[in-house]
Length: 117
Length: 116
Image 1: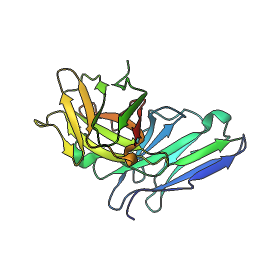
Image 2: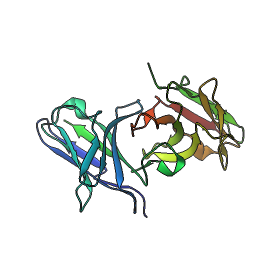
Image 3: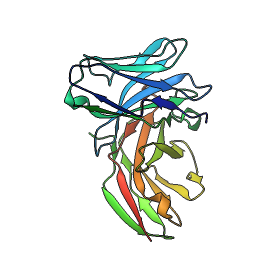
């Protein structure tokens, strides 16, 4: 399966702990996006990365959240000192190119469901 | 203002019938892309169909077609010959090209239930 991979699928953390979410893009894709989905809502953009670069982090909370996409390995979304309000589904998407055409379609992973106790 | 509006929280359709899911969008960017995604109960987001703002014809992908009315800023999804497996949440999304933004703006979704 050459789709977008995310792990873990489910993650439970207690308040104050750290959460690390991993995303491996589709083969050949170098553009990665992270979105958050609160219950019964649509997805909200968080951050857009290319290899070793954060291109757009306009949707990221200013504190506790960070993302990286290293030269080797998956993209990581890191949430420090988690709070109950961080409970959500976090989706990673990847695209071949970056733009608004069909070729730039973002393909999504299965998501990570984060529960903060 | 909402960039993507989906006014139907829930829709029901009889199996084998067609159904239209509404989506209106708001942008001043002349160049944009419109996308529909399906989210079944298992939670993954599945890409269905794409429409570009300069495309002359409505997009079609199998049983999915997009009723694109540019002047009205609407991009309704039409599912023909509904199947039980079509029961899911459906999200409309837009990406603006000229602004340089790379993210998708999503609507709040429509929950479709196919009745046997």
